Length: 197
Length: 238
Image 1 (tube, each protein chain N blue to C red):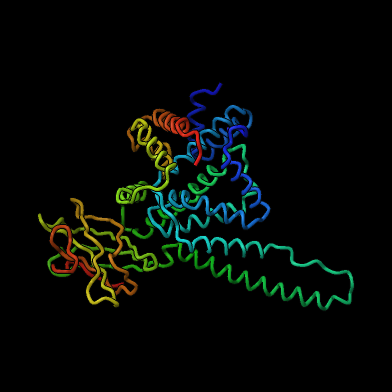
Image 2: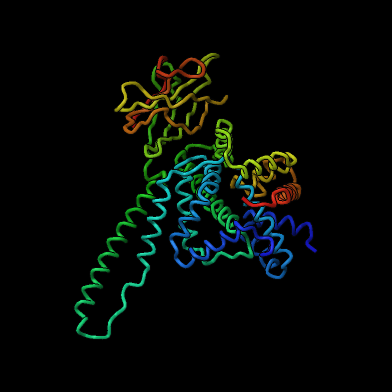
């Protein structure tokens, strides 16, 4: 997406990041206010633990503060940049958790299921109250209308720390099929969501 | 023209699923292809959208204060200290000022390190985990065993049970935390073993338990009970 199609929100985000890069704490506070909800929700969905998700979110915002000057608008919007930063920090935590759990239950021959946290969080969401965020509801609606095999592939790819080889093994599908499902699912999601939050 | 293979790799790259070698190879293609870079950007935006499908939750307000405090400390720690005056008459004052600023920075740094240490302790389960070994008591098989890794700070734990046969129909095993501050054991949930008599689950007691002295497993009615009724099968202290 080029400059000509950037939304007003994307432009405002970019200005905030530039100010943050110059050490502007007010801009940082404003960006925190804007993004803490979706980034925390993502971290919580992946980690399934509120304390862990809060620690991850703190790491992410400190990274935003220290790395704002490296943000490249050519590569992604500020929102996507922070989402991928969050996902990356959360995956670090999930991997560390996996290692620690193996130590904790050294006598165990059962490995932690990397999708467990996501599944637990999904269960929690069923009991959750009605969503107030229209954009989020719209994404969920679009996602639920994707072909189930595409939705399953992109959810496993995005919300867990499985590799694409592990996803293929889990789904019992050839690697090429899984790659194509992830790509097609992402593109369909993008096509149907041209407007930003 | 982007080939289908490149499109697939681009999707995996945008999601961070490529390993280091694959990502490096793909980045060399990216550097030479503006069209491919735009394609990756589109996929990154889609990944950003995907985050919105997570159930909407908000962190506590205290987290913002924590984050803002951290960046203030970082900023003050790296700010220019002092613009030195050329006149020698000001040297003693300058030295005194430097010492004051230096002491202030040391104090800030010490506070930051203490916070970081606290964060590391909070983030590292191994630094705050208490282990309990539960051994048979009553009618449990002699080789039945359970190990509990309990994190009081997070009020969660992991239990691993071996050699405990599944209970008869209409019954369930239930885990209890025996806490010094509570008169009765606190339920930590029903545990179901597999056909090999093994279970490994995470649990969270239904009430806060800050002074757990022991964990125990009892045989209860199916679905569990709010207050322990049945016989204790396994129990153990830290």
